Every structure is written in structure tokens, then in C-alpha cells.
Image 1 (cartoon, helix red, strand yellow):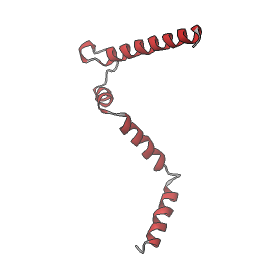
Image 2 (cartoon, rainbow, N blue to C red):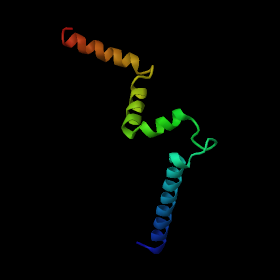
Image 3 (cartoon, rainbow, N blue to C red):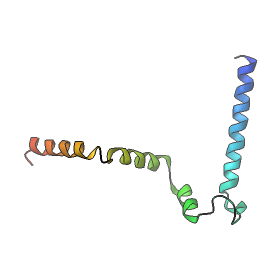
Image 4 (cartoon, rainbow, N blue to C red):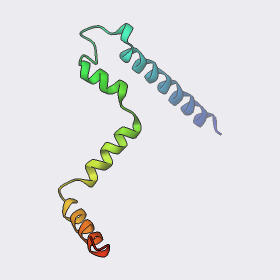
Length: 86
């Protein structure tokens, strides 16, 4: 690797480390003040209980069950019922 690439990589790693520390400080219950982000108890609960899997599931569900997909989904279900004699 060139020196420029190594320097840019090191700078990116330091930036990510700083961002991680800032996020930990923002979400730390001991360091939280009433006027500091996140103020909402609901948002704090959501941010501490949601996982990547639950967010992905929500996004997939939202994409599948959009109104534009419902007629297609209905036809698919109707076709399967006629094939299986249901």
C-alpha cells in the first residue's frame, strides 16, 4: 500500500473510533442530561431494543405489503388455492 492510502485508512479508522465514542457518550444513561439527545424515553427504548434483524424485517414487510404489491400477492394466493384444490 502507498503511504497516502495508509494515511487515509488511518484517518478513517480514527474518525470511526471518534464517532463510536460520541455515540456511546450520547446513549450512556449516566451521562444523559434532560436537555440532551435523545430526550424521548420512547426513542431511548427503541434504540436500545431494536436490532438489525428487526429493522430489516420491518423494511421487507413494508416493501412486500405496499398497496402496489397487494393485488399481485392476492393473485399468487388465489393461484395456489386453485392448484391445491383449496
